[in-house]
Image 1 (cartoon, one colour):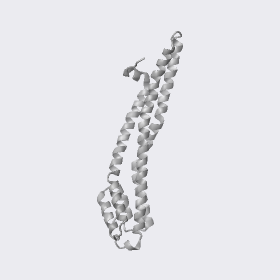
Image 2 (cartoon, helix red, strand yellow):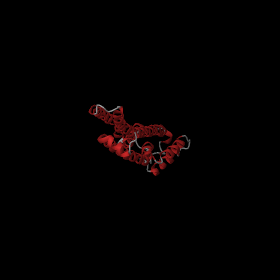
Image 3 (cartoon, one colour):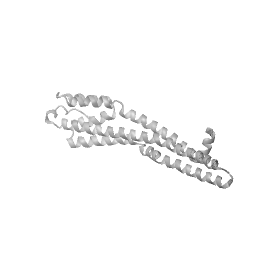
Image 4 (cartoon, one colour):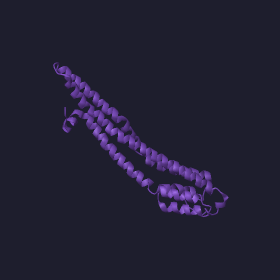
Length: 217
């Protein structure tokens, strides 16, 4: 039996409508997070690559150059590394300042991800709920028409399964996007923790103590 799009929508009922709202909200949230990640992470990789190169350099002014690059970048990564490159404060104070900066920007990256994970994990169950209602309705119809054949049940179940399909349709992109965003956020935190630790160890050397006395965070 063939079903038109209108019949499929009607078969889904209120549950399908609820899933449609979740789908629209999920897509909007994914787009907003994508924009936020792009804004925060743009330019991070080239800056990190250059700072790492300078950290390996034996030039006494390499870290001063790194500080200037971070200040000019106007990026979250640059701000975090600049706190480590400051000539003021003990290594412990620099480490604490860097950790707070990393946590602040990481919280910005993780904003809204809990909602995305909730949509991804609950949508299949919402769809299953709609399917159960549809199956119950199908058996009710079978009881109402005692002389009807199996096609009555098959038709009702086929229509009810549209809610299961809709639930998966909403859940799969949401879960995939959530996993991607969490990975990128964790990667950002790991990279910042590593490079700031390297910078602090480098600036802690007595050789660089006078060079960094004038660098502002």
